[in-house]
Length: 440
Image 1 (cartoon, rainbow, N blue to C red):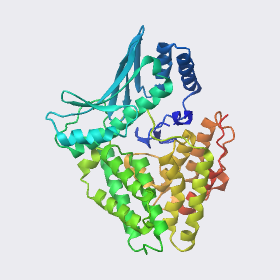
Image 2: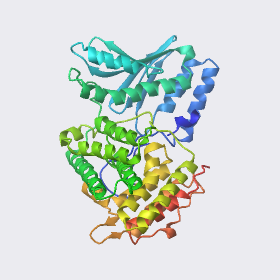
Image 3: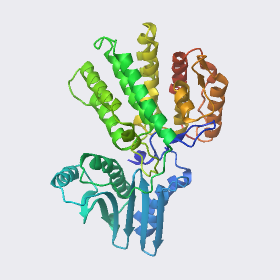
Image 4: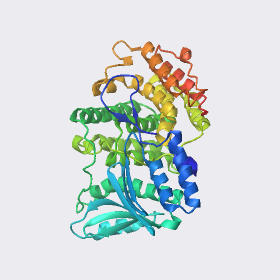
């Protein structure tokens, strides 16, 4: 259970000048040792029935000091707290008897039976929190007696409250015109230029994938088609970093493939492709609404043993060989990229690994970074040349910064191949596979 408590921040491009843009899903991985100790403090204080002091330690553990995502203040046995989760703010209070937290989802000026039916149905899937109506405010609430508010209960209860609210507010407003957005003034602005570039490349990448699939025999190449579509999901998630409706649509497409049913792969591929075609028709203004900057407190993915990451990379690279050897280098490239991209999407990776993954994305999608305004380009498409020196320098910088925590991490840059994107991706992910990520 404690493994779920450690997750990573969205990753900025390491090692080169450019705009302040974050990539990837938020995760609270790699908390400094002092923060990890605060969780132990909270647990021990709770067991000693020092409930107020336990809350002090718990909210200190939650606070990301760089992001300043949590506000907490106490006066005696009473206090209040506030923290961010994407598009939502969770506000709460406590006294000697109870702890309460609430988040506003939307305004409902006029009563709506369909809305209430939806919320009633969703209530059945909640373990700690519940939907509520306060005058014209749709809310989610969580509360607990102080004596039963252990750190674990608070963590999972507040996490459910925050992450569900962050996901549902956009979907509810989208599905029911009677609802109005509210309580989102804290969101950070994204420049018009960045939104335009992201929307442009979102559609560009989708169209490229569909064009690559079109001439293929859907039965013979069903595995390759699946890899193409799934790696597209993970690329969009990491580089475009959508929230709201666009994130929901991506998750829905991935769910088509991974749903445990008896449908054949070609049929699932067809349905995924159809959903991507629908995404192509989304107006840019609708896409822009999903491109926001926000602060987070809870991760929505959990860590995994590095052996799991290594196995994913190995399996993808084994599966790419046939496509490489049968004159499908572009499909082979996406398959080789898939192994680590799937892990970046599905798990909370060590930040050092995420930074190394980011270099791979800088090389494979250099035109995207260039359009965003980054000044150091790791791949020149016109000359079909990778900047080997810059790549090696960035890798060495990452290893130097993380050597204290991962003394055995040895990325062997001498094994990298720079003669093509496919060979680079294969050699690069091979090195990722064999990294020693045992912490000190």
